[in-house]
Length: 287
Image (cartoon, rainbow, N blue to C red; front, side):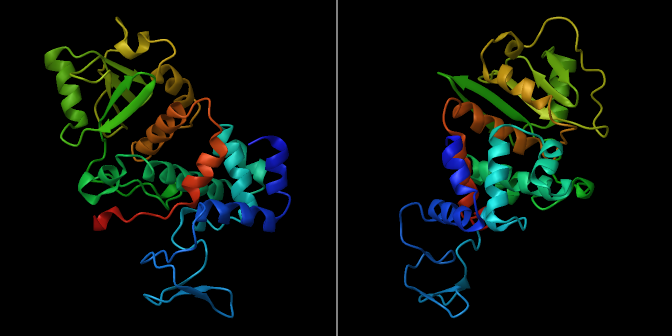
């Protein structure tokens, strides 16, 4: 989206709302977010009611854009800054919003990106043991997940990257492979990644002080992914370093964001991000 078109959409709250509603509808008629019925009628207070299941809602009900309490205009401005890869610290004064408000909105957007990934049902299903803490502020990230340090496999082929959750591999297993089977490990802060392993270019996880990985050898031969110029890891590594203290709990969100950015590099990200933001929030727990 060029600057002229962007300014046209953010010139007023009404214009911003029209743009987001268009992304919600995606060229189709309005549907009930509960049962997908199109037999709707409008109430006196401008809400909609489904003629099938009788559910009462408004246009953004059950969509990511309805989370966080931002105005439509603020959402579009945040999308533009997110597209430009600003951090929450830099966004907050630009948007004239509190850091926690911006942090929650960015988490919502990252969750929306993850929810649109092909492997979202696996990552978001309770059986994964991963708790991403969608609504938490930074101070509220103490809740423990069963799979505290999920391990991911990185595969890059023909310019596309695929980041797979390996549910049967624990971080402790990776450390064991290093100690007993000489699998090369490298650290970047709390992020640990390996040399090539089976069909993967690397295995990767994010730890914290509850996981003993201080003995990981960071000297000597570099991991395979470090030798690849113009690769996903070269793209992701510089961006991960910009984030202030990525936590194990949020790490999957950052990884899937970077997967999304890499696979859509060279494209106009703004409408793609808007589409993810305007999508319905899935309930993979029911699948």
